[in-house]
Amino acid sequence: MLTGWKLSVLGIIIVGITGIAASLYGLIEPGRAIGLFVVFVLFIGALELMERIRNRRKKRGEVQSSKRG
View 1 (cartoon, rainbow, N blue to C red):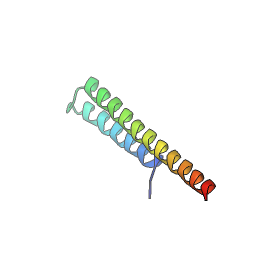
View 2 (view 1 turned 135 degrees about the vertical axis):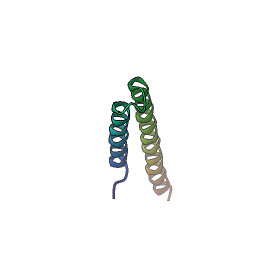
View 3 (view 1 turned 180 degrees about the vertical axis):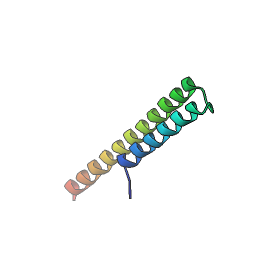
View 4 (view 1 turned 45 degrees about the horizontal axis):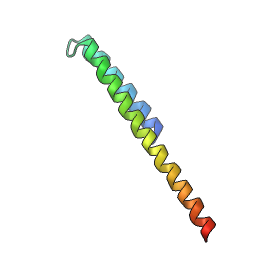
């Protein structure tokens, strides 16, 4: 099963292909499709960054608690 960054990359690929197909079939303007894709990529990037920060804090918390005990 895909998790982490692999799932994010798969989501970006799927959204990109969908945006291209929608603009080719005239369902959405190409400029708007590009804009929405960029916003989606930035959103996924922010989620990945928050996940890395959370994991880093967890590791630091475990190290600090083991040093105390």
